[in-house]
Image 1 (tube, rainbow, N blue to C red):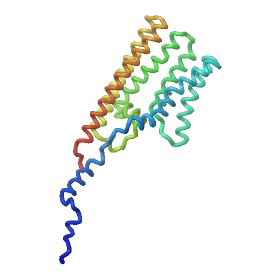
Image 2 (image 1 turned 90 degrees about the horizontal axis):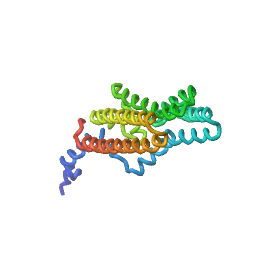
Image 3 (image 1 turned 120 degrees about the vertical axis):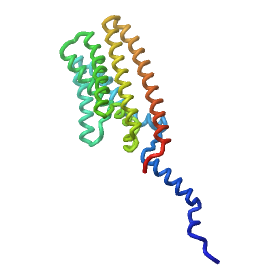
Image 4 (image 1 turned 90 degrees about the vertical axis):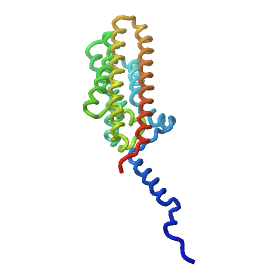
Length: 236
């Protein structure tokens, strides 16, 4: 009996080759958003390290050592964490870098004056510097929003190099620059025109609502970007 043709070894034939090539062309830039639980497991330690811990360290030291001791403790925590990561060869998270900017501003101003207004003005000035950092990262083509996003969700380099993805992070960096600028403006106005109690409660609610809206816009925009990038054919 005549042996079957070797062409039958691939049951899909040319169609299978075409499908394989289609997937191969997509493989270099496709990216799937991880599940929420996975994102939280990855992002939570960085959030605690860069946002929660410096505040806890500051207020604990303030209760024990006073204002100057609290400032020294906060600065030591943040810059010690950065030095430790560099020494271990690990990357420094964007949240920790932003914490370093904020704690530097607060320490410098607190060393010059003990005014209550100036003390509460310090986080506002830190927010203003963060806004400037987001804005400055855009013309440098190193969007700070991308740095923060990759801290929370690891992404392949090929995906990040895609032009649509680069444009998305540039636009989102501009958005967050505006958000922090408005945050600083609201805080400054209320600090000088309202009571301290009003400042602490109302300002906190307004800033939280503004930040939540920006987060929703960022997440929805990223999902839209993902659909476009993962759905288009890529060059081999």
